[in-house]
Image (cartoon, rainbow, N blue to C red; front, side, top):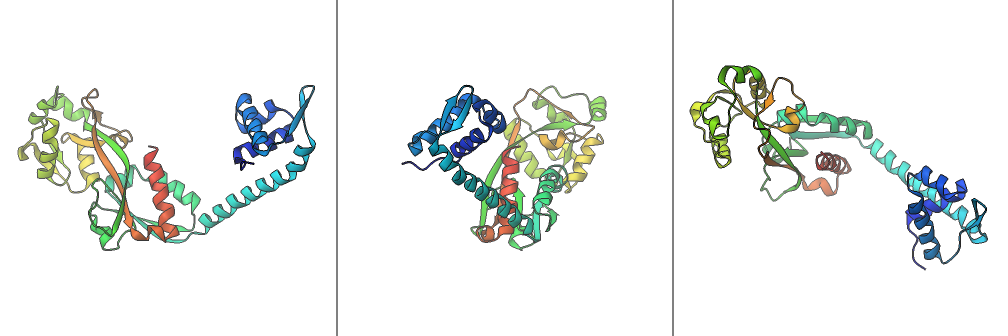
Length: 292
């Protein structure tokens, strides 16, 4: 005899309780043919007939009646397992420090932090808004969200998203300087510096955007401040699309151009394997970015 599938047992219990395949299917959110196949699969696995039809109703056979209380005990056990797991999460306490850029901390993380607060209300969350991977190395943070994979062997890293970005500008800037018509045309425009001019020039070059330090007359090593300068019309700036979509006062340039793609890496210490607190938050963040 094959081990029965839990979904097939659930289909059996719902059918026994409702007395019909259609009612059981509605209860479980399945189509009637799918439910019927699941019940048939359970009968095949057990080698017994569980139901017989009387008119429009289904009634349990002797074998079905004998197995019903065992099935209900399995449901009670599964419910108890879920409650125990929930209680374990609810009981997790202590402080978890998550480091991310100030832009991501302000614009991207709040929804997943709300979810974390609901699941683990006794956990204290400290968001370290910084771009320095050394926060992890100095043990100033437990989990880092970065766009570059760290090369330190004592850290664990997982690629959780390939994010997208475009160039953005404020309508006030475009009114004064005109709208660029091509990527090459960006060379005549002002840009807001997000902290490292030389790195920006190197990054934009392969995209067909050839800039010099003369293009960067204003900026900040604070991403939030630099993005606000873009919004206030000081120049053009690249930004992650999920951040720009939640910001007012900017327009996407070249909407038909393929997006700029960049990785999102989730990084932590090797304590991931032993700390329930770090494991919970790491997995929650990984799921959040994977489904964005």
